[in-house]
Amino acid sequence: MNILVLNCGSSSLKFQLIDSATEAVLAKGICERIGIDGVLTYTPQGGDKEETKKSMPTHTEAIRFVLEALTDEKTGVIRSLSEVGAVGHRVVHGGESFTESVLIDAKVKRAIEDCSELAPLHNPANLIGINACEELMPGTPMAAVFDTAFHQTMPPKAYLYGLPYRYYEDYKLRRYGFHGTSHSYVSKRAAQILEKPYDELKIIVCHLGNGASLSAVKNGECVDTSMGLTPLQGLIMGTRSGDIDPSAVEFIADKENTDIAGVMKILNKESGVYGMSKGLSSDFRDLWKGAEAGDVYAKEAIETFCYNVAKYIGAYAAAMNGVDAVVFTAGVGENDYRVREQVCGYLGYLETKIDVEANKARGEETVISTPDSKVTLLVVPTNEELAIARETLRLVK
Ligand code: ADP
Image (cartoon, rainbow, N blue to C red; front, side, top):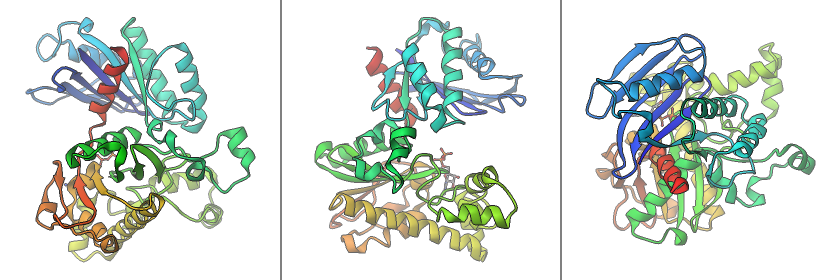
């Protein structure tokens, strides 16, 4: 069965058409600048990438262009839309309503809408994508795969904040965590690579991309994660601050003469390693280039990022009373051996030894620790689209 995986952001839409039998990606691409002008980038399997400017006032037009590209006579990969057996939607926030993926019906759509308060930029876009597919491909089953669902096994001591309890009861204000599809996929792959039962392992997953989060997975269940009510909490990221003293919000507002919305923009878009490097870049490739050329801000940004990751690893080793494996994934985690080396440099107390040569691997499943290391260190490339396709297939079967 061919499964269309859709990831609708506020102004973009990523897609992949996956053949569930072979797990091959038949075509993939992205629509960007939705609501502004519109660009479709489309790559069929074995073919060339093509970029076309198209008017996309809303996600509905964007999805229509994606379906046209997939069925195009020359560059399409299917003859008609009847060859799409199901659609899997990435949905950012499932609140406490969703502990796993579900088939979409009217009730599920209402529940996703109810969670919009918790993710005002993302959930409405996800819903628009769902509605557009209903309109354009009526009758095709659709699944919602939530970014938060994997973390719903966290106990109250991990998800409660030190705030009046009423806020949790009345407003559902708590830690949720994100990147769940990735944490789930990567921790399961790690267990397979280690050839040990998933439900007998203590695994720390370091998802280090532009957005970054850690999770502690004990006996096959997430017991803690670094992102919170929103993806702003936790690690220092590309442009997000991660953890700061909440009083800094008032302090920045006063000093920079702005309001809460202004400070939130600063914390989400102008902070992280980007802000720390005085705007050099949020991309670690640029930061390393800067650091090599003597840019002290870039060097410090990288050092602070790695120290931050190492501290969270320590916290999660404590939370699980030990750790069997630390796994690196996402853009930085998969590709940046120098970041991995710096982070692992802090883990000597866990009797962890990195294999410097093996660690040079990029973007492939690799054990990067020495055979005598007490904790196994691994690189496992994440594949959220494949994980969504598998979930969708499981539900429609
Ligand atoms: P997201 O999905 O959150 O946008 P990704 O997981 O794709 O992010 O990660 C993107 C980031 O990965 C880039 O900003 C960059 O910092 C980092 N990255 C990608 N390739 C490399 C590389 N070869 N070396 C170092 N960092 C890299």
